[in-house]
Image 1 (tube, helix red, strand yellow):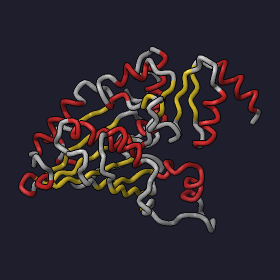
Image 2: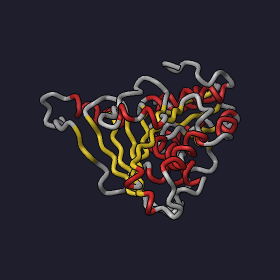
Image 3: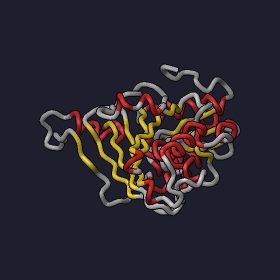
Image 4: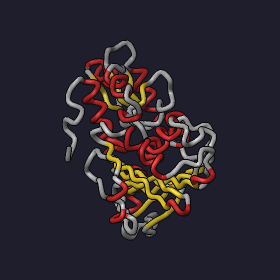
Amino acid sequence: KDLDARRAALHQAELAILCLPDPAAREAVRLAEGSNTKIIDSSTAHRTSKDWVYGFPEMSAEQPIRIASAPQVSNPGCYATGVIVLIRPLISAGLIPDDFSLSINAVSGYSGGGNTLISRMEANESKDGIKSNYFSYGLNLDHKHVAEMMFHSGLKARPIFVPSVGRFRQGMIVQIPLQLRALVKKPKYDAIYEVLKVTYKASRFVDVVKPQELSKHTDLLDPEEVNNTNYLRVSVFGNPANQQVVLVAQLDNLGKGAAGQAVQNLNLMLGISEARGLANV
């Protein structure tokens, strides 16, 4: 709690990872001024700042290089990671117009809500305990991750984002339904899949599921499937006859959605193996 002690610690560090609320993160950055300390900020305070490098290495071919040379990196939000991985390549390829009206549905493990939600979900008889196995929230349509999604995906029209929480500690599914006939270019399923496959073909941590392997997931897609890893699994479910597609990202909200991605960024910034210290790689 002592500012002088915190300032001294920040100035002595080679790299600091901030796991703080936004105001405290901004304060820590000010305390580190004048030092050579590199910073990874896991709060939302700097995710749309042009002065910070966004810490999603798979976002572009150049992003790992930018992260490796950056003094300050903002670690992405879990929902935003799942959205950007799906739509940024399609917007860049012109298959989704940047002013298209998107709807995004997502479910996360309750650990994503922090200590308060964790205690409420795990409370037994507490009057503040949550007994529901599933609930939606953020229905004021002003979730703090939306600005980040738009800023880094290239989307100019604000999407409708409906997040929800399930009674499981960690894991996440992000889903984006598309009516292909409503898109200007009316792309086919194969075009959507091909763009995502080519974009992430060299990625160590993002896997695009082959169409022939999707059938085993059409009736049960598990949000906990890639838990305890830094992997992000992308699937393109489609019905060509109906001209409909659902883009899906599965990730661990505490892995690629938070701490795993922070470790990946840490490794890049320190010039060591990108996968060092990450589970199941």
